[in-house]
Length: 392
Image (cartoon, rainbow, N blue to C red):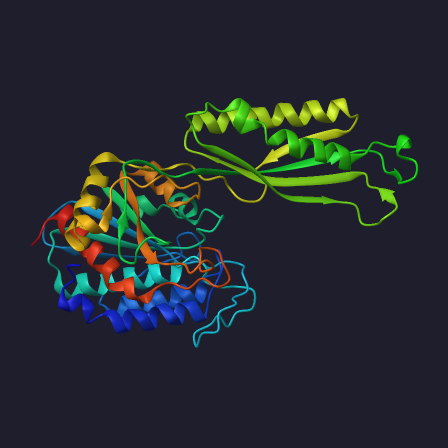
């Protein structure tokens, strides 16, 4: 592992920053304390933080030399609605919320990179440091873009990273093309005629209809999607009834589907509509499906070739050939950095968080970011900036 002494000296500061953020988690578009903490640190590095894009986003720029090229480094900073079950001195103090995905670590790494680059200025061009809110299902990246992110902070390319449990600590994984899946939610509402449980023939049983719909949805991938393509349809909620002796008049089914191609996205959407309509009509109930009723869907996180090659070179310079996986399997998880990649060429990679010990997985109440990898992430960011913008 090639990490400079100057970066290693930042390790304890980053550890404290990260644990402060972990102690005070804030969820989508409510990251006011988090944003203030980050903005104060950036100002202390001599940078001028810009506030308010995406409601709580923070952006700071650093221009060195006369180079005209510009690069974005992005970190997410929101937490999840999960009750933490760790017994840690920096355990979440906000009930029902925790940093169960490592965004506290991502923000601390980017702060470390901002400090190092501000202190050393060994590049020629402009770096935009983006601390983005609301990655977890609320599309904070899209909101920042709609608020004028790239008009206010023009850039040639964008880069992001995410920690990954059960990848060896500090090891990188990156590939061109699809890295993370597209993500869509659906809500199905089934309406019928309520009746006494002893007299089902007098009504229309929405629970039976819902059960058939759930079963039918599991045929979509196996019978609609080309077997060489990857996709998954999952029902995650069913709500109906509130008593033992009555068949209700409404059932609600919610779930998600994920894939790596827009054509597959469209095919799944259409098949969902057809199945729901057909089963509803066949069983004499009214049914409708709505896509992404509360949260926006996410596109595929797609890495461009040239920028992936640059990210790969930076990772190799830090971790060596044995520390870089050049062909990881794409992940069915989703990432709203995909919206930035739709606007600008760029690359999103994973950095290993180390062994999960079977329960410290992402979105798990026992998860904790591995502070040992903080300098590795900074070293990657610094090397990437030098490769993209050139040394001063």
